[in-house]
Length: 274
Image 1 (cartoon, rainbow, N blue to C red):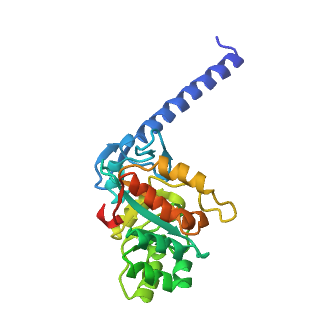
Image 2 (tube, rainbow, N blue to C red):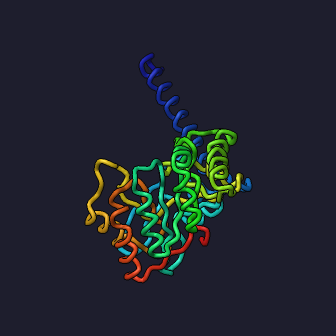
Image 3 (cartoon, rainbow, N blue to C red):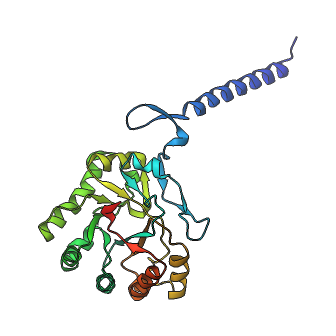
């Protein structure tokens, strides 16, 4: 006959086994999800539920490894580069506020006849209507970077998500008299699969990036050499390049940078050609 201590130990082991069994069942059940059409697919073939956009550069001149593939993003009308061997670049700028650098950036783009996409937030629109009109007049895309620049992955309702985009659309139309292109970039690259589906349902295409560098600290700008080290060695066919319009370094080097990319055999296309 078991002693009381042996009995308690036996019950403890049995309970631990039962807990492990059901935990295993739970984990296994999480390995099957549904795509947007409702058909079951392995979790390895869909995006994580919530994620920060990230890249890993493995080989100079080649596209980085991203935390989602072309195919995974395509079903949400989302992109981070063009899947091509053609030496083409899609140049984009995120515009959180204006500090005197955007005009010089536009000057360099005009000199090289280079199209770009400017993803703007609400205060940039309201504070800089003349710059917005110049972007449009010179053939650039003005895209939607949300009105308040929140962490969109934490917005759970379609109504709140849509409002962040609609407020930008309305202000853009008020300034330009035109309907805004439905191009969306998640602030800070934070997204969820639900967000990507919401954007798609609203008629938006979502654009991440395949090349960027730390250029957004106004009081700690990279040197020209540091900028070229990243932007020349990591450029690759089909790249969507993300730069910030607040960067004084970008404003100073853009003319030379575009020339260097052209010397490397690259051409520039508008983002709407992806």
